[in-house]
Length: 90
Image (cartoon, rainbow, N blue to C red):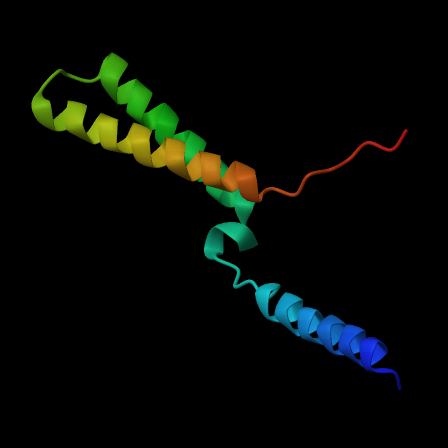
C-alpha cells in the first residue's frame, strides 16, 4: 500500500472514531417526554398569569406568580425545542 493512501485511510478511521464518540447523547427527561413538559410549562404560565390577574396583591402571591411564569416559560421553551419536527412532503 502506498504511503499516501495509508495516511488517508488512517485519518479517515480516526475521524470516524471521533464522530462516534461525539454522537453519543444522553437523553434527559424533557427529551424523552417533550409534550408532557410542554403542557406542564404552559399550565404553569397560565397559573402564574391567573394569580397576577385574579389573586390578591400581597407579596407572597405575586412572588409565587412570577416564579410560576418564569419556570413555566423556561420549561415550555425547552420542551418546544425537544419536540420532533415534522416536515410536510409535497
